Length: 178
Image 1 (cartoon, rainbow, N blue to C red):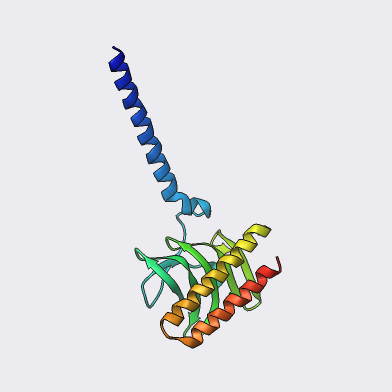
Image 2 (cartoon, helix red, strand yellow; image 1 turned 60 degrees about the vertical axis):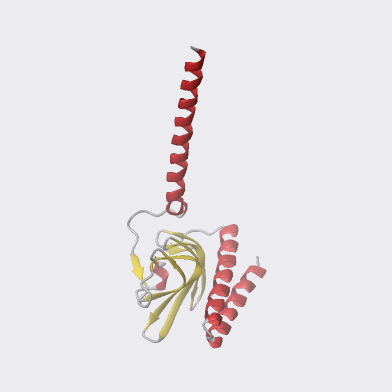
């Protein structure tokens, strides 16, 4: 009888651990979306040259947007840059982190200055941004601009590598003011 109780208890314990593991896996798979407060109504874009998919912050406007960074399973991921381009004219740029094609945090470099913070309701920094999110946004953007500079250096495009190295330095000066 004691043997049956011990076996039954082990089986119940195994089922509980399995259920817990499944719940953790489900929670982690949806964590990027939950962390940035998104719903299923996001507008997806596609890089015209590479076909990589992403959600562009609305502050980049309506021009075609290009991704410079890693594309995994067809979606932009990691540190990089989303750049709006109207023909040969470069527009606003987002420097930051994307997960599964969705921006997480970074900075949009606009003509009038920076918009910084987390991706919320389709754009970067649309709500009151606290000090930590502002700091983290500039730090992530600086690292992203350095990654873009390294990308162009690897392609032997010295002018673009220098340009984005300068962008990284400009973003770094924003951190010095914290």
